[in-house]
Length: 404
Image (cartoon, rainbow, N blue to C red; front, side, top):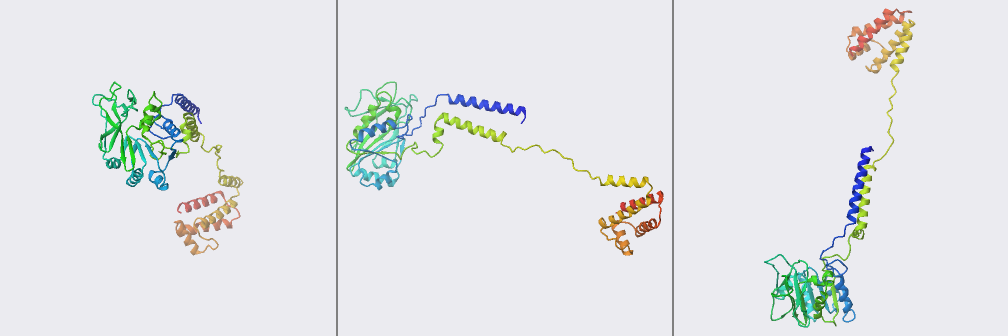
């Protein structure tokens, strides 16, 4: 690893560390997710209202949580009675589930729903329509809410100081429906001049249905701000305290069960950034240090073929000592080996047929082939060979091989 690369890596690591430190020391942003879950302590969770309602009803009618779908919950226990409480941003039932709930309500039970959007099938059944508040003169959508009953109504309505979607009941069955609460958009004064129904009651068989379009009233933020808890408390005054409260934990935007094993780690900002730092460190290690390391392999020069040099040395010794006869004998042996290995012709018998094969495979004439072998015989019969004769043999062999 070069020096410049090391400096670059150190710079990157330091920069990431500084960014993580700054991020970890910033104030944690407020989570405004509308979960309405009883285990969430975020502003729009329902931990506070759930705890208070549970504490209020457990010594009277009783209190129970239900994490099952209403259809399954009522089917598994057909003797259950009380008030089924649904609080969420939107509540939507399918046909079978709604039929099961309405049948259960008709037997003398209570259905309480607080949601910005309520199942259309239920509204159609009750001959009710909803609409939303629209501010024509400003963009403010903060609601003012209050109750109608003089015993539950306060001197000034309650203000929810955040812009939200505000729905109300634009059409109701006035014969069978009672308006319990109203709302209006805040317009620089804590007074409701154009009330719209946002909390109604309707008898259904032997039971009753309570519909409310401001679920934020049960949120932690609303409950803990000023005296807003009085509004939520008065909302529940229409519930029978002698009946058991069944708190729905199924129709919730927020999760009660954590599906990710890293949830607890990532939910804490300090553990989260520590985790990120470790992951980034591992990635950098893999990129720069994770490669297989080995010692450099030295370049070893291959052994030189010394056969030619050796042959030249030996031949030079023979030549200097004028051993021309021995040199000629070696040349003959090498020539025969050339014929066997290169031309692939056996040299056991050097007859006319063999001569023809040698000539044809070496691109020489039959006369030149016979001449070189005759010259070998002449030199073989001599006891002493002159330098000129040896040179002539070399020329014959060289010429013969050039034709091959």
